Length: 127
Image 1 (cartoon, rainbow, N blue to C red):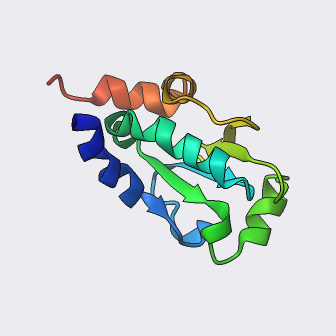
Image 2: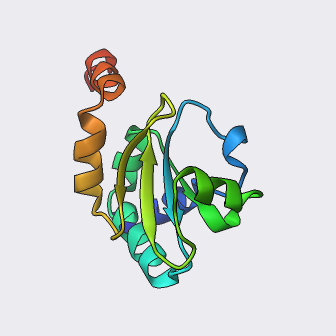
């Protein structure tokens, strides 16, 4: 039941703005391609740990919903007929990509090895 309550939070963070307007100190997770089933599976994987996504400052962007999708497709060498997920760090650099939907644990493992994330963990007050 708790997972279902977190789903709206995760889906609320799916953004349909141009990439330039959203680099507000978030880790961007771009979902590319017209394969809706793969996109839905990726969103489902992330919804299973929406709190982990929020803690890691992940903003999900479905590339086809932004104002200039062609620019994103070019920048990340993505194809419209193939699913691809690309993780971009807070520094703007590409950190991970996959042509298959990725479980949140795998994605979190990549993020948790990033220097900025390690610093965030270190500075986080004990709860």
